[in-house]
Structures are given as C-alpha cells and as structure tokens.
Length: 185
Image 1: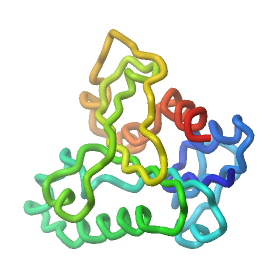
Image 2: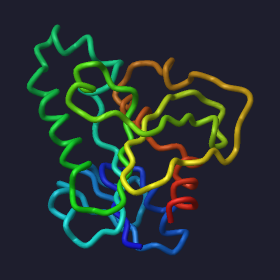
Image 3: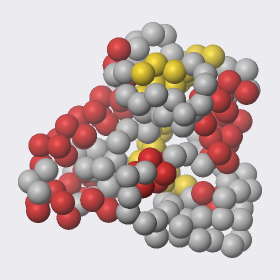
Image 4: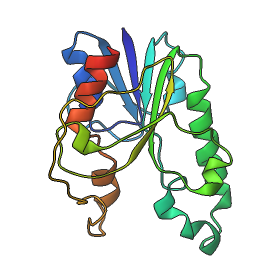
C-alpha cells in the first residue's frame, strides 16, 4: 500500500509501515526526527498523490479538552475554526482508508467535528501509561489491543511545562504505531 502519515514528525508510524513492506511517507511542517521518506510542508501539497491510506495526527491545541479554557480567555475562536476546518478537510479527503488521531475534544470542537469511532490507551499496546486517544476511522476496523500492561501511570498528564512539552505529548507510542501497521497494513 501507499501510505501517507500526515502531521507526523517522529517518523514512528511511517517507519512501522515501511517495516511491513509498505510505501510510506510522513509529512509535517517540521523536519522528521528520523531519517526516511518525509515531506516537509503542507499536507495538501501531496494529499492527492494516489495514497491508499492516510493516518493523520492534526494539531489538537485548539480542539482538545485541556485547552478549552483559553478559547474565551484569549479570544481564540478563529483558531478553533481553522483547526476544525483542517481536521474535517483531512477526514473528508479522497483517500479510501483514513485514521485521524486526537485527544478527547471539548464541546465546541465536538459541535463541529463528527464523533470519534474508538478510544485507545497506551497501556493496551505495551506502554504502562494512560492517555485517552480518540480515533476517527474511515474504512478501517477498530484497533485491537496487542499487549495489555497492568501497571499504569499518568506521566503525560503530569508532564512539566516547557518548550518541548507539546512535542513530547504528541509523539505516538511505538506499540500503537506497530499495531496500526500490523492490523491495517
């Protein structure tokens, strides 16, 4: 398959699909952390290049529950509209198989974006941490847990503020990347 991994700078999901023999490329405004096929730029520059599947990780800053308080306080309603439009454009693009990943969204985002299809946790895929992650699926089955971990920690929630916090919080867990490639590839 030809796979587009949109809004991914870590290269984890891209590399998991490549390891399974697929033609995969990541795309992000930032450079890739790992060497490999990566388009640095706007995903809509390449989205119509004949991909069979897209897995996308659009920015969640204005869509997720953790940032809802800033919408009114900082007058970020326009930013919410831009984020929602970008999310829905990805979901409605012409690629046959799609997964879009985002955290739990606040009520204003839920009014503008259809309900997710599944929630997953890192502890279902070999990582002893909690981080509820929603998946919007198009022509893909639910992701099945691969390695349930009993000891659970909320490290992501307790992460200290800092310049790298958003990047650390957004990085896909390797166990989830591997499960996507194994089950959907």
